[in-house]
Image 1 (cartoon, helix red, strand yellow):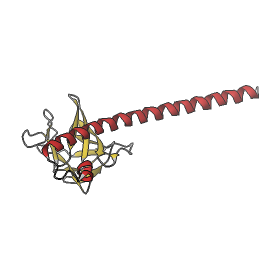
Image 2 (tube, rainbow, N blue to C red):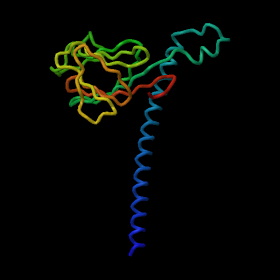
Image 3 (cartoon, rainbow, N blue to C red):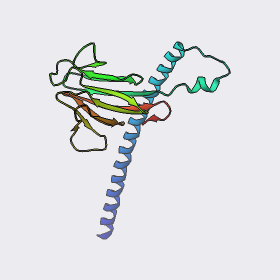
Image 4 (spheres, rainbow, N blue to C red):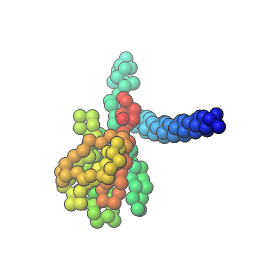
Length: 185
């Protein structure tokens, strides 16, 4: 009888280890796909930069290969009406709001979004979400937090990392950051 219990416990433990291994493989597979997505996007941007900029000296191979550091942000937008992915090259700040023509990313049909709601910008090689004094606030949820999102104070800011979410009105944005020197950060 004891032998049967020991065998059942061993089978249960092996089954639990198998489930853990499968979940880790799924997580690594998602990360590999995301890294491939950013690497492809970065190579496309490098090709465009190479067309825009002539090589000054053919002997300066190191400078030609490394190039300037690029920070790309993939923002996955989900709402009742849309499910889009935006790739942002963060050389210029991006504004999000309801007013067409004044925002980089315009959210129409949502009265809870201010005309100029928030801004994504890079400062000191970090990505920041800045509230622009929006009436209904910008909500932010760190990736590591299981709790509900908290709101940024009006004209407040938060540093974003990969996996963080922020909410503008009824639209949720999920952030993934790719640094050309470090990969997904």
